[in-house]
Length: 286
Ligand SMILES: C[S@@+](CC[C@H](N)C(=O)[O-])C[C@H]1O[C@@H](n2cnc3c(N)ncnc32)[C@H](O)[C@@H]1O
Image (cartoon, rainbow, N blue to C red; front, side, top):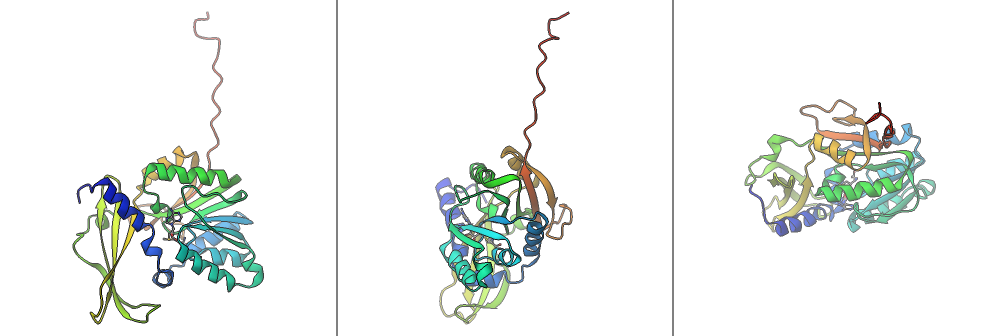
């Protein structure tokens, strides 16, 4: 598609960071089989012996709850009230000891502030794709830096942009699937399509939920994702004062290469390079 007017993009982008998360029961149902990333973040927290974990965009707690069960204290930040309500309900259902390890905080990726510093900060499942500009990315990483303990790590995953997916026909309905809505019990069809803005690198996705019996309207839910290409991501991370210490193409730690599903990065604060002292002798001296 061509470039959309900036105010329309702003509007779609804002709605696209919220609408998909307004039905937490449906979200949990749609991603109920997604387990490999949870295992990856659990292993990472254990490897790093992270007593405390700060989780950005924690959502309904897919990763938060297993981390708390494993014995980590987790501060879970998210902007979505419905997702946080689901997370709080899950925390309340935990055994007392695990429940006491979770703190839930409503906050924005770009300007959050919570108490303390953390040996591990994570943003699991494309959370950073809700940072739509270089400024937003930099703002988030500055907040991460402010919350990292010395020697701490920031781990996150975003999708590897799929060129064939990006240029899909935006008029067609893709990935049509039949499912039962977990809240209403109604038989529904799911399908999706999107417009991609190649300048802003933002995919404006539409998720369609249509009653199978044709009775009632089709619900259209917006989801907007910033696409990060690998070299750009590395540059953005470096610009924010981090270095990539591990990088994978999936959660079983396969290399990042053509056809990979994700970019999984573990970053640490870059050690500022010592400048070589400028010799006062040399120039002009004989
Ligand atoms: C794809 S979900 C991932 C949720 C969770 N990490 C998981 O793995 O299931 C993205 C999450 O980011 C949150 N989010 C989006 N934009 C945000 C923002 N600007 N500040 C805080 N949270 C945000 C959404 O509310 C949503 O819960």
